[in-house]
Amino acid sequence: MTSELLWYASRATGVASIVLLTAIVVLGTLLSGRRARPATAAVRTALHRWLSLGMVVFLVVHIVTAVSEGFVKIGWLAVVVPFVSGWQPGWVGLGALAVDLMVALLVTSWLRPRLPERAWRAVHWAAYALWPLALVHGLMLGTANEPVLRGVTIACAAAGASFVAWRSLSSPADRNRRRDVLAGEWS
Amino acid sequence: MRPNAKLLDDLTAAGLTGRGGAAFSTGIKVRAAFRNRADLIVNACDGEIGASKDAVVVAAHLDELIRGAELVAPHYRQRVLFAAHRGSPTLAQLADARLEVLAVPHRYVSSEASALVSLAQGGLGRPFAKRVDPVDGGRDSTGRRVHPTVVLNAETVWRVAQIAQHGPGWFRARGTHAEPGPRLATVTGYLSRPTVVETEAGVPLRELLDAAGGLPGDARSVLIGGLGGAFLTADEALGVRWSTDDLRRYGAALGPGVVTVLDPTRCPLDIVGEFLDYAAGETAGQCGPCMFGLPAVATAWRQLRRSGSDAALGELRRHLGLLPGRGACAFPTGVARFGTSALRVFAGHVEQHRAGACSYRREAAHAHA
Image (cartoon, rainbow over all chains, first blue to last red; front, side, top):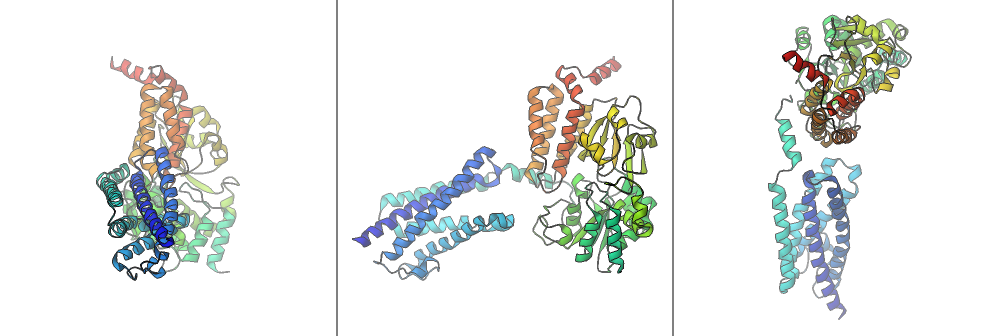
């Protein structure tokens, strides 16, 4: 009974995490390249940051319940070390990779005032690997036999992918201006 | 006492500051250069609009300039580069003297210290953020490690040689307590004999103008410090001493020692607009406040020139207010100072534009008829 409750909790927080993560990624694409007016960007930045911290809570519950549920043997090590889970090592491993990247993102964002902007930015690009890893992890494990949950995950994938595509195809004012200026004589 | 320590003591006692405009203590910079065995870039670009004093230093005092460079960078492993604009007579003179030269592109910000450092190590001539001063190394805007390099204005290096030879007492005998020593000034613009004069801080500005033939009776305004400087009315210019303490009340400073008399036969808003259009085109496209802010200021100025309206004035002030202190170099700060002081000195003329009756346009139309 307890175990079943844990299983449901793990499912629910997993889905909540992927929804939040997708929202965070979408906000991130909207923030890149100084596309928005400063006031709008400030609201988006705040949402991006606070949702990230909020998602960590769901993710921790997701992981703790999944591992301690006990019906399948995942093991605590598999939370951070990929591909060592006793059950579905591949798909659980993708989740572990996502956790590792997320820790890196959180720590660098925490230390951002003390890091070179370049270093923070380089690590932050990992978000684009983190999100698909988490999506596939969720799609293949949690929601396989549950059409509604699977629908949520697929909707997240579609929404996120379209924003990422928009971000990479549209050219922000910053990039255009920098390119125009660089075309001048500088050496 | 080791010769190095003697030079540092002399520079500190003399109170020599950088003559490129920033007026930072040369003694502190040279101390850091010794500590890091830094390369030296002698900046003879005359980068400020109107300036030509570095050209005079190279043309008339090259031996002392070279001696000064040897004093700042005495070790054989310290590379010494002489920077001047590509194609300039100054660059040719430096090259003819078999000095290692750095040909600098004709861009306003390319003669800024960090831009020269970037160019010298094979990068683009664009400034970078100096979280670590280049004299201590650090990294440029592409993330490449910077070899410790000290950048000194050509006049500054020449003064180093003079102080080493004549001593700090000789140096301090001229100028003010805050701004000691002889210094060069470029006096140019609407004058009968534009010139470079050796003078000192604290002299009446009128004296500098007299050296260039005197301020013409019809002159109305004087620009102190070029595109990074500030305007004075003709009356203010005739009554003020040429020192930062005295010029401060007009928002001006000695800076790189440029004094430009504006052409009184042209609409001052047109002249200022040309400066601002030029500034907008000279951003290195790196920092947002500069690459978007300067074109915004130039556009707002054009709007003000057309309409003279309060809305245009408000928009201009808003954009000018966003620039000071921002960006990797002082370019946006300087342009904001320039634009703000133009608004102060030409406020009366803005009123004419508001009424749709610029007196210069009327005269021009008259001349046509």
